[in-house]
Amino acid sequence: MAFVTTEQMMAAADREGYAIGAFNVENMEMVMAVVRAAEEMRAPVILQTTPSTVKYAGLPMYYANVKAAAKKASVPVALHLDHGSSFELAMQALRTGYTSIMIDGSKETLEDNIAVTRRVADACRPSGIPVEAELGKVGGKEDDLECTDPGYTDPDDAVRFERETGISSLAVAIGTAHGIYKGEPKLDVDRLSEIRRVVKVPLVLHGASGVPDEAVRECIRRGISKVNFATELRIAYSNGVKEFLKANPDAFDPKKYGAVGMQYVTELVKEKIKVCGSENKA
Image (cartoon, rainbow, N blue to C red):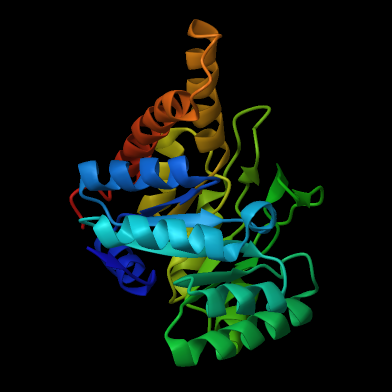
């Protein structure tokens, strides 16, 4: 249908009370699997790459994969830089053609986070590329992302942050974490409601892999418009490959086991799209 920015799809989700599923992809197979799931569910979708994923193959490689898949897709597809770690990387993604950029200055002081976020937002605005940022610290570890000192988003700081940066969406810290949970996360949904009351831009939930579906739905009811999934997709793809190789130990054709990994990812993404309520919203 189209290779698009996240702005219109997230505005519609924010207005109508559902969320867009945002799925981290690591290779061509995962790109194909996520887009296939979105088409089957008739859902708009966001594909994402983190800085460590970018290091693995480079921005142009992921851009080419996603753009090719989007060109053939019957639903809107966006490509998002997840947790952009610097102004320089954000600008590289912008020049490459990414249709959505995140700059993550959450490890910095509030003032420094505002400064780098405003700089990225100002640079992306002439091209019409939306910018996501994070306020507060989402804990856990995933790839090179690690936070051992998580902190919740302060609603008053969120008002100032939105006003002074010009962001398009805000990732909030309410108790989720990146990576695999050791127990069920305790989410501060009342804090989320307060942030939604005072902030105008769409809100984003990071670290949703492993969060119970009903908890994700409650966050969406309280104002989340984009939900990020990463770890569960990696597990699903790996499980599919492992299962095939266990049953076929002499297999050597990557297409064979890659196809099984893809199917596992497609089925998982379809379930997450249902949780987000974005099916039939394309």
